[in-house]
Length: 466
Image 1 (cartoon, rainbow, N blue to C red):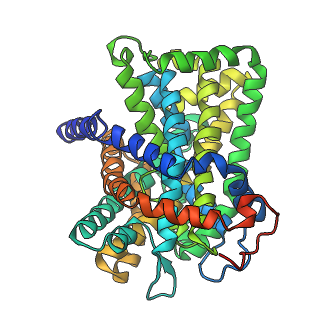
Image 2: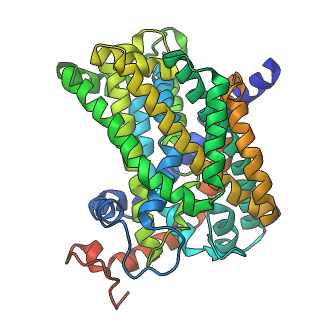
Image 3: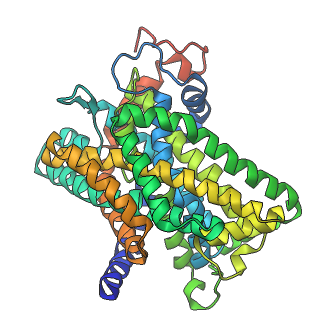
C-alpha cells in the first residue's frame, strides 16, 4: 500500500506541477476570460438573479430539472469536503497564501465553468430513457468531430468514472465518518451504513430525485456554515485586515503552518492553492456540465451564466469564510490539518465545543451532498462507455463503496483523487481551448440580443429576435 501511495504522490506532483495542469488550468481560464470579455464579472448579477431568484427559465421546454435544481446539484457536488478540509490542507502545506491562489483559480475558473456548461447544453441529446444527456464525454466528440475529439471524450469519461469513486465518494464518506467519530463518538461503521442506505434511496430516483433533494438542503447547509463564519469574523473583526494582508503577502513567498522547507517557496502555495481550488469548485474539470445539460433552459448562454455562479458561491464565498476563520483565529499555526484544523478554528472563534459541532454537521451535509452529485456524474460517464446497461450496477457498487470509504484509512485515496481530478480536467481543458472561439462568438451574439441580460428591462421572456 505504501508503494501505491508513493506512486500516486509522485504522479500528482507531475500532474499538478508547474509544467502541466497548473499553467493549463490558469491559462485556459485566462484565455476564456479574455475571449468572453470578462463575462463572469460583467454578467454576475443577472446570472445570480436568474439562478437564485427566478430559479426557472420561462419558456424553457426541454430539460429534466429546473435551472435552480441544476445549480444546486452542481453545488452539492462541489460544496463538500474541499470547502472544509481542502482549504485547511492547502493552508497547512502552502500557508495563508494558498487562499489567494484558490481565489484566482475561482475567478478565472468562472469563465471555464461558464464555457463547459454552455457546451453541455448546446450539445446535449435525449437518451433512451427520454432524459437529457450531456457533458464533456459528449460535447468533446460532437464539437470536435474527429479522432482527436473522440480520444478526448473517452479519456474524460474513463477518468471521471474513476474520480467519482475518489473525490465523489470515498474521501467524502471517510471525512464524515471520521468527523462524527471524533466529535460525537459515532462508530465509523454506523455512519457508513446510514450514508449508504440514504444514498441508495436517493439514487434510485435518478437526476430528478437528486435535484429535489439538493434543492432542499444545499441552500440551508451553506447558510448555516457561512452564518457561523460571519459570527466568528465579527468576533475577531480586528484580525480581519491583517489576515487579508497575510494572504496577499504570502501568496508569492509561502509560509506553511509547519514551517520549514515544505512551505518556504512560492510554488508550494501556488500548487496547493490551485489543486485544492479545483478540488473545491471543479472549474475546468467539466463535471458541472453534466448537471447543466439536464437543466430546463431556453439557451445554452443562460445556463452557462447560472452555472458559473456555482464557482462564485463555492470559492469566493464559502472557501473565503473557511480560510479567513482559520487565519484570524490562528488555527493554521497549531500543526493540525484537514477538517480538524477547521474545527479548531471554529471552536476558538466561537469560544466553545459548539463551534466544532457546527463544523461536524456541515461536514455531514457538505460531503453527503457531494456523494449524490458525483454519483450522477459517474453514472453518466459510465453510460457513455458501456451504455445504459451499466447504470444499475454502477449505482449498486457506488453505494457499497460509500460504506467502504467510511470504514477505511484513505491517505492513498486522497492522493488517487488528486491524480484523477487532474487527468479528467486535462482533456476538458484542451477541448475548451480548441472551442474557445466558437464559445465567444455565440455568447456575444446572444448577449447582444437578450434584453434581460443587457439590463434593458427585467422580463425573463426569451426575446423574439434571439
